[in-house]
Image (cartoon, rainbow, N blue to C red; front, side):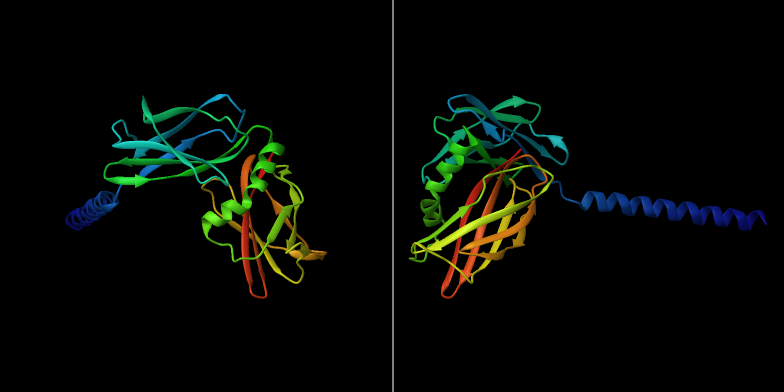
Length: 247
């Protein structure tokens, strides 16, 4: 009986050791990832020095010796892009200070190279009064779409019914679409909605008449969202990106 119990205990211990070794091998085989967390405000005032920062980690540990950290900044609708070199603040944090002199919506991309890997997260910033920023963004939509290469020679205009919404509540997201100055009807319209690097959500809109299309959406978080309006009609496939502020 004792001999039999001895062999059972040996078998159990052997199984535990093999399982532990297997888990260790799996952990060792899992590659570490370069993670970059943006620390950039959603909304700032015009002419106010603002710190753009990010925290860099590798395998859960702070990176203090990144090969390169730069912030690329541009205003929506403007082809000019500025590349700013960040300094190391310690504890895996890298930053640069910039003063935005014009109202509008800007994109900030952190270009980070470390441990022979590269990561480049993106975040948008609204500068100045949200209404001014929305107007500035709307006036430059044509130029932005040209940069993306999606204009097809037609004069298509898309205007959101509102650029400001409340977080956490279902809202009506509406757009009026015209082509060559006339209301565009019988089109297939979808809204593509996202915030910073979060998941993109697609919502089908229904036609209300006179070139107006609506859909119910819920903006979960406060901050700046991008709304891309996709329009398809006969011989037409167009999209334009708008910026909205969620309070």
